[in-house]
Image (cartoon, rainbow, N blue to C red; front, side):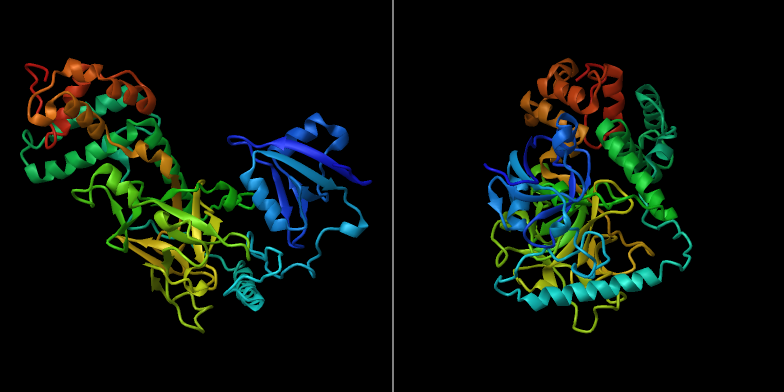
Length: 483
């Protein structure tokens, strides 16, 4: 491709976790104005091609031959691995968009996308109204910044402290965890404890703690959750301005409320419920998580605006699909004390189902969903199982931060018992017979589980015996014959 003076071609490859690595403004609707160079493919290009380095102030004017449509160029960047980017050097004719020229919306991640709006059902004035509403809300929020607030009290629905349950320190190694678990199982086994009812409750807490802390992946997520909860309590906020939800959120995901690592938003008989697997009695592993699968339908008019959809209807376009929706009345835009239940609906009214997604200020990998036309109203989990659009979510017990777990990683939530049961069933245990412990330990699926999920060798006989004793309601273990 022939280039004009002040223009040059940049060729980069996007793969795996490697991003393009630019913070760009596309409010003119035609080009991508480079505001900052971040870690990623462009940064690598600059290092290898110093004479053709991309700098803040430059503009992308073509992506793989696509020109004149900023939205189409962004879509091309998202969909392609090999990118041919035509850059225009910064000059007086193509200066950074001024505050007067851009939309007056001082809200990070919320701005007009910068393209002519001719979509059915979305007249140009609608976006102007939306941005005006959000601008007023931002001004109100800015005015309240100087008001000192006390850290919120410890929430009543705070998750259990698994380390305290096991009586170990947060830095405890695998040997210390096993030792403590073995001691507690002997101490609290209901058949050996004088207060059986109390022991039954206690042994379940011990098993739940051991299931999480003995699994490195679950333990890491749990530790991050505890840190996020403490940051929220102290109102210590993360830097989120460089997080791009559209680039970071998985295509298919599960919504896990912060502080409830075993709970997920599920669709049950066309209702939205927040449930753990223990609460969904009789529901198999795959069935449970299939009902927890969601996706986002991104909308072009405003950055980070989307609709949250049941995954099976995700591809039905802007005028189709089953969306998470809510109902507020006209005139309630600035009253964040008014709430609404969240429900599933085929209604495509943008005021009922359009959301603005933003990164959580407290937890990495978590996001918030705010009503696009209802600033300050966030989708929130309210114990025990409600999902609501509510305001003042950082002042009470409602949880507005959701960890978006990639659906392809659902297998990580399989419990040790489920893995062992699958192995036992495959060896004839499903018919009521006993399986030798040596055969169970040698099972390929069991060995892979310990190697890949727990990062350790298969337990020895003593470890298995302790586990079966602790899970006495699920397992009948013959210690004499090791089966």
